Length: 508
Image (cartoon, rainbow, N blue to C red; front, side, top):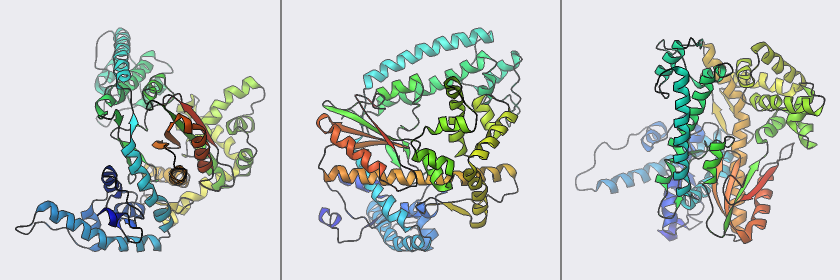
């Protein structure tokens, strides 16, 4: 079997090749030149689905059903395995032809298929975690939560379940705090967005936000991660390739992509991820990747020139859009400029901006209008893309990845507006996901070519994390930076910031 799987002259098709490859890698077998993964092919063709089981593929593309019963005298596992192999072999050319006719073969053959091997290896290697540090941290969080709850109970004048939206709503009613919003069942809304707005006036709202965030970190990471550490001292999570409609990878068991990096508690969680003795961690992070893609796609002259000249894009926006003059004014307005710059890629609206920045909707509307008066190419892009999506039913990344928008002509304004925002963001986020995957493929290949022991161990959106022997740090860092910055040729430079440390946080 090993000879067959490692024979580059044989065509090989699989269903969920990442799982198959992971099992084979544990046996010391590294399959080469995978021709097809029918699950991944189906995902590219229809990225809006949540899963792609083999029975769905058989019905959708072969107009056949899997067997409901197994013939007498035949082992069930053997029968189902043979059936899976048969359907995989028959559906693979059908999917390949559909990809070819959709002009999506490049995304499939050059990006997604090679990514499978990289992900399988990353999951096998895993990440080393200091479980004892997390246990101590969980105890510390518990003390902080007790102090927070005491303060909340004092303000409320009684005890209540802080995690219960219903009971929090009742406390707000007793304190005459108007949220202005109700849930579907008629109760007072205490959603995160509502609390953020109330926190500008009421201490209790901010304390509830703090409590909820702290309690989530405790349950999701500080207490949960030590239980996931295997005998090798490492966590072997799952990087999902066929979940996000934009092509982004997702992380589960555990989700390591959602650890907040800007909060003190989130940073402490990251510090628990450490290298083996004699190694260090290397973090390589694209600088403002989505904004650079936005500049390239829209061909906006102002933003493109700013990136080409190596300017601080947020400071540039603060000056051009918000009229910042001296250094003090620039510092204050740069924060606003940063929120707007990143928000534009997600089609931020006046209400969303006003909530994030703490200004009125009218002020937020003026900020957005002034922004588009400066970045005219971006305004045109945001007008054109929804029309393109309505005409074609989909929009594409620079590499041909599609996302479909079946409800973009819906009569319901809320549904239609959400699809328009997603359509505006798709070429940007889809292209970012493609570039990061190309970088992962190229870095992995370059490290192998140099016969280095450095291993890629995690991907968090625009950041790649590596574990490297100390004597390889300089060479590996140079290779990683080079391959990431040359993963795609845009009209603006791709910049990667590389850091080295004794834990994940210190490597940033």
